[in-house]
Image (cartoon, rainbow, N blue to C red; front, side):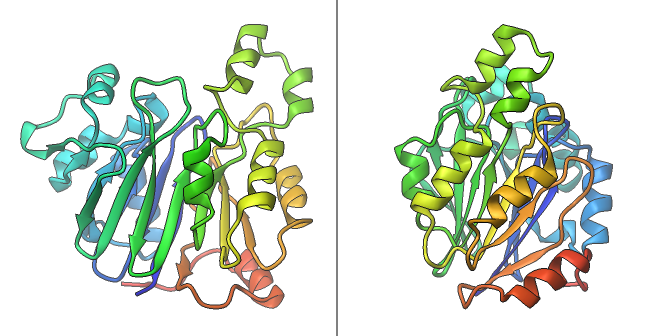
Length: 277
């Protein structure tokens, strides 16, 4: 059974990632408003009725700011650790709050969601793998380094959202204070273009069909630069730079042969997908 994936927004102004099959879907984080989430999904032909749960990676506002309204309106279970809940100051109805543990598999219909620890300056941060049948999609953002867990799960993916937060030169030459630059490039901060590319080149699976480069810095990165950097090493993997201003297209992940060069070109030109459901 194929999976369908989309970035609804990706960046320090809000993060929200959609992964689902033809019956159900989950959101990883909800850092944009309920109204904006609905509008973007509608434009993509996706229905909120398909969404059965929200999984929360950590408590920073760009990952949780839309959760309270969205979860209440649709009575969605929110999978979140107690530390993340407390540190984020979220106020949610008790009946929708669901705790999870690292490496525990949670079944959402035919979807299996597995969380694992990541390196980030948050209370209890996790990344996620979403599996349906033999298809695996990973969400790897807000990671200071590509630790052993990231390497292990990334190497299994048919598609992935992978952080490429900053360009080293742009960060060095930018106007951020020294302490913030150290925080970003520290082992608990964010993944650089160079680090993300090394992970991609060294550990991608032979069946990685789609890579959505995510959480780009507004001030310390350039979407064109990132696209060109990864395209040079893409091989058969389609490279998409997720936007901080708008939703991506919806991509079908079926584990078959990866997109041909013509299909890649058509996908970049044709932004919106036909209605899926």
